[in-house]
Length: 395
Image (cartoon, rainbow, N blue to C red; front, top):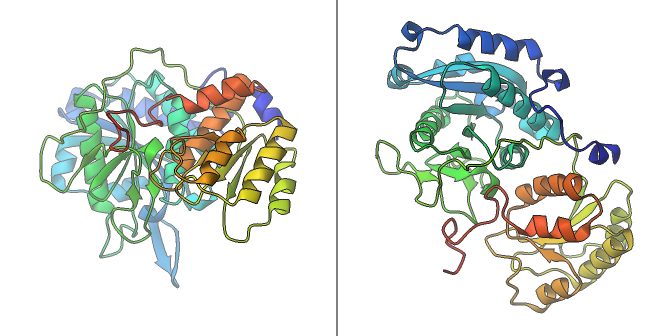
């Protein structure tokens, strides 16, 4: 497992030969289909490229258990006539699984497929729509943001649903509509972002956390302002003023090789055994540690001690992340101050973003802990809130 760190990033991020879970022919056939479109086919509609990956939106319920069922084309049949007249959606199904069974290989293959499509189609399009399960959506979206990097030339919206589209009470139709309108707004404003759209909110994917299993607003954005909200019937969609146009940076995706994280997440809980944590950190596959605090940068002192001592012994970085909306660097309690004195580095980002960013850092800087720490605490693709993007940062 450690070898995948040494292998670094894919030299060709559009190399379909790296696909193991997605059929490369499906990707190539979609490109051929798109390139064969005529003006008569498009009819002045805006082209969206959709990728189905499964999740609740495409499931059916049998004996009280949800199982994969519909493909993406069938999902689109539920959209309104107005949307069909406004958007042309071309799609393929990458895989159809419960998102709780995903790992980084699934995100990597989605990224490879999207980049291949982007590089080979000749018809203008406004972005990608990824239909995804909600359990790992924030993790996959954060990883996609880090994999595609700073020079991202296209937008991607992740969406799903809390109830299958076949249920009489479902949120899928609304989520599909809001996703398409968000892609349109980003394109019209020359922006390239990776976004999660659920319910009446669009949030930055690398700032999202799942907060509910039944509410239509399944995701919150504890650090960043919303991209947009749909509770007012504005059209065109009004985007947050902090968003910027596409960065004038070369598109150099950093798609890492390896399916699993090299970070041990240690959540401080009442009664957590410090000796058990110390043994876990010493596992050869652990190359970084994240201490997941109680909330206000607080943790049990003995856990802080073993995280600091064991990580120093292994010469690996240790970080602390808050599970709620606080900047871990701003400590008001003794345990927070203690972490920083023991060189446990506070991060101002969500756990999904921190886990993905560490994978990039380990491959870029290897054992240079100072460089890793500087990279992790500096904004890279919007995961660290700025004065403009967050209501938490003092102006």
